[in-house]
Amino acid sequence: MENIINSINAVIWSPALIYLCLAAGLFYTVLTRFMQIRLFKEMLRLLKSGQSSDKGISPFQALAVSLSGRVGTGNIAGVAAAIGFGGPGAIFWMWIVAIFGAATAYIEATLGQLYKEVDEGEYRGGPAYYIEKAMGQTWYAWIFAIATILACGFLLPTVQSNAIGNAVAETIGQGSVVATAMGDFSSNKIITGAVICVLLGFIIFGGVKRIASFAQVVVPFMALAYIITACIIIAINITELPGIIGMIFNDAFTPMAGFGAAIGWGVKRGVYSNEAGQGTAPHAAAAAEVEHPAQQGLVQSFSIYIDTLFVCTATAFMILITGMYNVGPDSASLIIQNVAADTAANSPSFTQMAIESVMPGIGNPFVALALFFFSFTTLMAYYYIAESNVVYIRRFIKLPGVITALKVGIITAVFFGTIKEANLAWTLGDIGVGLMAWVNIIGILIIFFLGRPAIKALKDYEAQLKAGNSKITFNPKSLGIKNATFWENKP
Image (cartoon, rainbow, N blue to C red; front, side):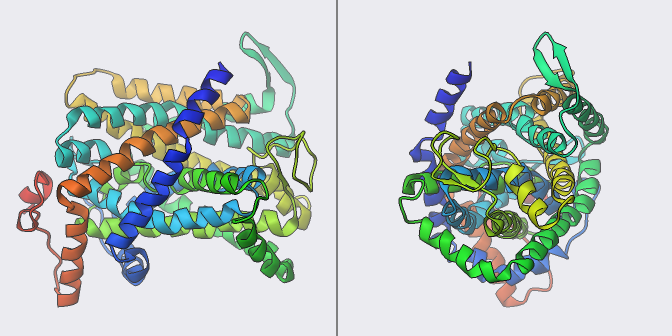
């Protein structure tokens, strides 16, 4: 079974997808005239504007929900894996995919806002909605919806909960061995999985408002605490920082760990972490209450910077500056060995050892706590994304009890992921990310050539800003944007 899963992952994550992610980001960066740099100040202003409503959440809450999906185990264990398999140069490619991906994030989030709907008193939207309305291809929208339910409901949650389980085991030990029909498992991991499931159930049974309220408090706090810790470690080793930055740039274009490996792992873990082009963030973006679709697109573009340029870079600098990493395809053929050969790169171990080397007794519990918050909020976001796509399919087929079944399914997947090994969990997660990215990126490129709706929205918004309009408005019909029914009917 594991060989079959690895073969599927190799097909999905072929070099074609890696270069598609980079090419799409570059394409939209040029078309928007580097909006992710030009409009940086406007992004910051928009974070403080807007209010929630009975139907939608505020722009900041939408940012927090999407960030709770972006900022997760990929920022800790994912960065370690990129370094461990692709070398320090992989971090350079994570930065590249973030900078270009910010433009992709604008496009998909704006489309999510443009084509959102009101369902049972709440805003709903995402790639399935904009594929149907902008492309006119319901069958393709169904492919995305089914792939997303599979990925966010069952595959990706295993990665997040697995990282929590591993971090807890690294901190307090495996505990006793519990023999089951499925094999032998750590008692501490079983207890950890049970606790996560109970807490997750409480949050997701409360709906999107509870998810948003929890995320807007926890996400800024956890990200800030993590970055402050990283800054302390970097400050203690500040004389090493120029050499580390030089190593990242040099190794990005050298055969060390393979030039292709550096690109491949950098892009793969970059997309896994910041999710630009994957199609997850448009769901939260669609739920926001805004005056103009481009506003939430800009806010979501800014979230890429927080995820990759801040949090991922903090992790990378901590690992590299302390030298707590290995590089190589497996433990038997390491190119660089600084720590025990059997240390799993697909785990938070590199990060825990990095902090532990500078702050003895703190590294293991701190990373375990950070991973809990990072991964738990990501699990909440995954549920909301899966639910949005179930709601989309339910528009066509009445499926009584399906939402409850989804909640039970994701909780089961979370428990399974907590107690299983990391490599299988990561491979399943990679398959989920890859499936969604293929369908979504191709979709937004087709939509561009059909009508350029997100580009038209950006030009309209910038024109109103330049004119100094006291009130920002949006009329899709005047821009030649079709089927944006929510905005057409908005009073």
